[in-house]
Image (cartoon, rainbow, N blue to C red; front, side, top):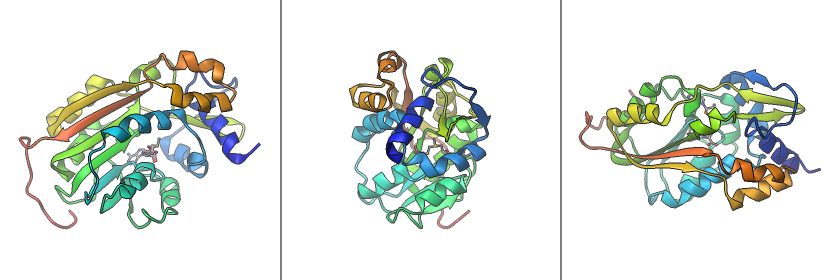
Length: 263
Ligand SMILES: C[S@@+](CC[C@H](N)C(=O)[O-])C[C@H]1O[C@@H](n2cnc3c(N)ncnc32)[C@H](O)[C@@H]1O
């Protein structure tokens, strides 16, 4: 069995509790989880990542010449795409050195990566034209800090995409996790309701332009089938799997003057 195929099976087995195989999963911190997941993260065909990309990509504005920020960039999945679409300069931040180490092997984004916490950015005000924070919000307890930092760092009119495991999927037992060899590993999260997300981002200075509850569809079915989990696909597609919020930094909310250089 190829490494990629094995990894695909692992991802599907662990993208939700209902999809996982028997056995007690271990529950670990985000720090430990991403340290262990990093080496196989990109080898893994993950139906949730596929679904999220399928919905977000057509909604992206033109990236030509835009200064973009990928918050909790992980192995640089989105940053690499945004740079390929013409974004310049692009920057990715993440807390996990293991994930950043993998990102740094990708030539277009190597040198554009910063180890930083998404509750405190190392950037000047109004530095970016676009930001994305993909599948990471539920690792952060303090949403107000994340939304405040994003509002400070984005220029008025900038688009921001925020995605995460949908709270309804979490309520049905879906969990962020992966398989490390024979061990099912779950990463501890702090799920946020849609209302909580809106109540953090809107007062910080964002208008909500789109709120999407994305469900698995036909494009994700082959991933299940290859993992011998095709029989679970129909029930999985009934659950809102990924929440996608498209925000725009509004012009009326505590706009800060553009300050050059690091804070
Ligand atoms: C599921 S991965 C998503 C990675 C990438 N955004 C993607 O969509 O492929 C979640 C990422 O959030 C990062 N993360 C968790 N808490 C963080 C924090 N407080 N600040 C920055 N990054 C964080 C983790 O290190 C991990 O790389």
